[in-house]
Length: 90
Image (cartoon, rainbow, N blue to C red):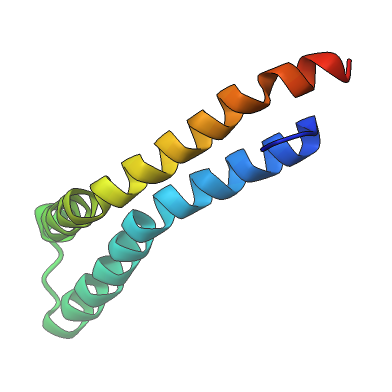
């Protein structure tokens, strides 16, 4: 249970980090690979960089979406259960 507003904020920020990190890492990794490919072949097409990132991020979100939803549900349940304690301490 969350008992302090600071703890509540800290857990919320960590949850945001946990939910966004897989997609951000996939986009960064694909950007690095596409950048290296673009530099070695000297092909500078805008769709070359956006399309693989879109596909990779979509796949990561599809694969990790279930666990992310479970994390959000768990956090929301603990948030709802801690509301009486947060109100009493004020």
